Length: 405
Ligand code: ADP
Ligand code: MG
Picture (cartoon, rainbow, N blue to C red):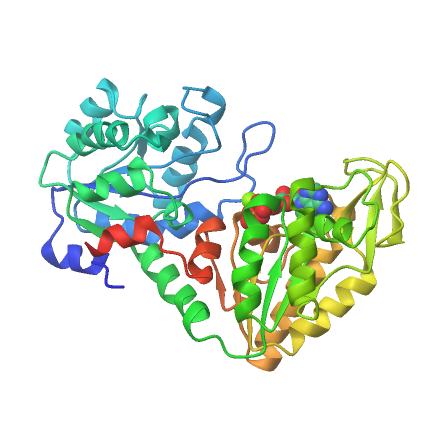
């Protein structure tokens, strides 16, 4: 995979040129709209700083949450513009629209070394449209903002697995380059995909069961062990005939899980104990139970201590680890211990066993910081969840492939 890189663009020169950048600012917000983890904003800074230092007129495109193609102030990028201003030490203007009049006026008014953030690209339904003609039309509007010898820099690694307008279609209309973040992510994750040292352990959890059950097949074939926790483990426990009560469950995948257990049985590690909760709440009543003994009407929100210890042992002797998805609802401190144990075992493997340890997934990465663990203790923390999974699974990422054309 050859991509043109930001360094090549900087060598060509960016002074006074409009550079359209796709960044990933899809950060978690609390109920009051405050950013609870700015990891993705921090990860975007090297590319933005390099362009600004080069004298570019920078126009950034990004999305936040799922506004479903409608303008919704709840998903405005305003908090991001503020956080970005602070970190860059310069004013980041936020356009009042995505590709409308205000965006155009502000883009035209930029001088070299200034930066404009467009409003949430997903306010426009054409961003994620399956209809290529609609996306092409939207791409033309965005590209028109970059009137001064424009170029495109793709730096939102978290979205490169999507053929969306601001990721894919704009890249076809302008000279396109991989930003520092995308370049680093692709290089590092390709190492896990192409040449993992063994034992290679994959850890899967989180809440997006349907997205992730599908990848187990591809990963189980390559990995020596697949550790399963988080929301997806309950469909496996149900496949073993256990009553998972009100835990997350994807009934239409039970048969698939039975089949996976049949084929990969000894490679798949499933919980033997759990932390059950009376309700989905941070102050719920809780109880450590065997995996087949969740009290009636309760739900499991974390893996139990025996399971965490067994998973930790498997991780400590690894040489490569890829982790996607928390082991439990780590946002509630009472249900964070499984996630913490797995993360700590990965840190120990990195330090004591020279293991190459990669964290992929927005919430997994956030959990490392929120639980107060040392980010430097891992070999790499990816900013992309779905994108990192699809890359190591061996799928082509449209937003990366388009940079090689
Ligand atoms: P990532 O962003 O790392 O790819 P996901 O988005 O798939 O991970 O999932 C993260 C979410 O999964 C977290 O917010 C966490 O609360 C939730 N989660 C983990 N375990 C459970 C569980 N047992 N029940 C419900 N939600 C869970
Ligand atoms: Mg997530």
